[in-house]
Length: 449
Image (tube, rainbow, N blue to C red; front, top):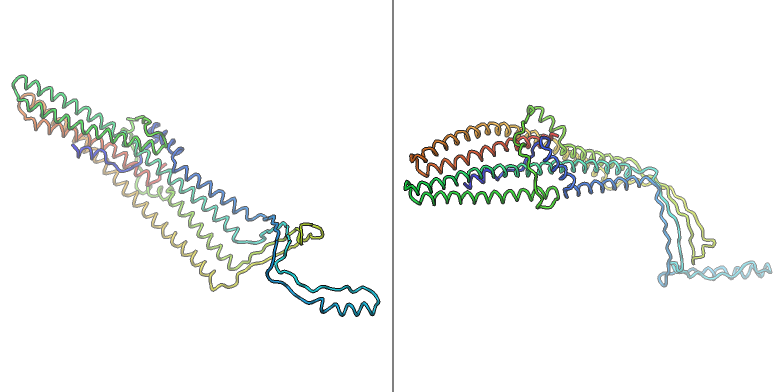
């Protein structure tokens, strides 16, 4: 019996058709809206959008208010005996001209670090030509596109995981019905044996044996209930809901009629729609922009305008301290040990890595689609076999049950037939859901909307 439960409960995560179930689609939409992982991705996109705004700001003039005031004491001095050199000459000139037109001059003894000195100014800078700014904006826009593609990949995974959990939940409900039917059957079997004992047709041990089979089935039902609660908690977690919230069951989902395209078309659709490919292509565009950036830095200088307007002098008086300074500048790194050539080559290598990875991803996607397609075909055949096995197990059980009532079969035959009909019904249930599972896998790897 443990093997039966294991066969039923262990299912890999797969994606089913939400469009056939309004209930499932409502859970998916709730998950896409509330899932914490997706909320983080949306915040990352908002963050990338702010990086674009910052890149655009670099095209605008930059104005800075930059006042500073300096106090100094000690340190190096500028000493120059200008007075000793000029004063004798000035004195002689005053005597010859009989005037005081030539005043005495003091020797220079000035601290190099200015004391009680301020420089209060507005500085501005405007880039006339700067390739870094231009290509940085292009790169930031491509990075935003890559982030959006990453979010769509996660959305696909969330949809996939919610559908998987919901399918598992529905399957536990169907298994519960199978076990309930089997328990009623075993309960009737206990009553039959009690009647046989009362009629002295059988001994008491047949009753104990039948009751033991009921207790074993109850253990499996308890395990099934635990698995159902686990799936429910996980499903609510994906939707960021309270773990105890109930899940509505769409039992008609298992009867969905599925249509599958041919394998060639599925591969083409996958290559056209998979967001992983779009994400890689965007990263390749980023690498191309990085190559252009390094090439432009090699062959183009950076030109800017700048200047200062403010006051400068000793003491905060602002009297006769106004000044203005204008600049036009050019920066061009002509040689640095072939650094720029190396950076260009490095950017090209990075692009080649991404190109190779893109080809690898394309092959992997086609492989995934092929495997999922053949798995689905095998699942369809398996269901036919399972349905046939259930019919035969039911017929076999009816024959054995009739023989047992008439005293022509022993208990072990009855119990074996009972276990086989449970196994057959569970296998048919697994096979039915496995078709949805395999189709869902094909939809996921093929990026079917």
